[in-house]
Length: 414
Image (cartoon, rainbow, N blue to C red; front, side, top):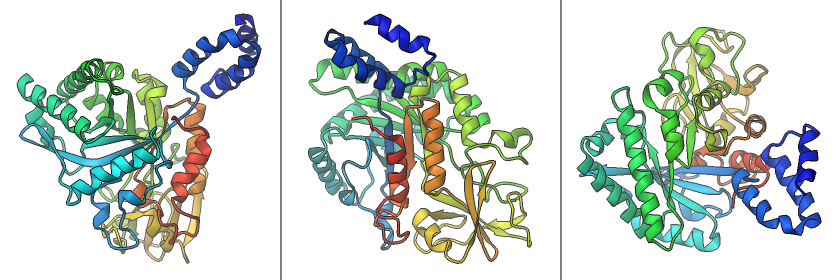
């Protein structure tokens, strides 16, 4: 039986997880005694990808048709859902959600419909910032109080795990961050031994910027304790840059004009950098955005790198300058000139003096093919509430981007 596997390997078959699955599916009927080993190999290699979907607690406050509530979500859309964001007060987890009771009810209802769905709680976020975590890590007693509060909260409300979105630890914080993750991982393991439930998952939302990666993370240590990372592989360019020129939010590869540090600002580089520094590929879940970054052009130039005078106009629903949700981009595209960047493998659109770099069905399919070629853990969506979840604005059916990612991934982890 092993010689059969040897033959497979000797043919220089690329033994990625898909091929391994196929090889084993072929072998299983021939070698029934193989079944125990097959199960073990399947568990180790994983023949399926994660589709990790963040949703935000402020999207319920948007006006129709951007108002997103969890109860409208298809429980089979993603393998993992992540609620964003919980907060910390007095070293304890808190949720500031006006519909908190409804949220827990919906979590239970989704999991009844799909018992294999994993729902995680994310703590932190951009507005919470780095300072929000400082009280938790300032002493071992405050860390312990926080860790205990996390387990109690997750178990009481039927969450399957915790995502730490510390945006971002600085040089002084990086040891604190490592220790916090380690303490959580240890406690989750102890809780698992004592409880009858599955072990709580532990993940982190992490930077895709090279300098931030160097400053913030002790990657080899984190790799031991985290189940996977959610790589925030977007916001590579935006209206905060100086000098202000147009640039794509989430280019897959570097552009022909990228020189020096700007050649780091793409998904391919960020993924490779994390892996080279010690994060196993199967623990890297690659972020795909359902929004674009926009600019107001300063001249008649419209290419990538064209001068801009400021952020693009705010969208009618998200109401944030320099930023458009996919359902707003679909409206913007009517009458716009669309250009597909052959080098960066993503599109941008221009209408009047407005420029937006975004992802569409074609670009997300290309990104999924890229992550499959590298045998990454899967894809992460930020966020499902900015896709055209109603299907009314893009004429591509509900969740066009998430569905394209899902189709391209093939089999999802269950």
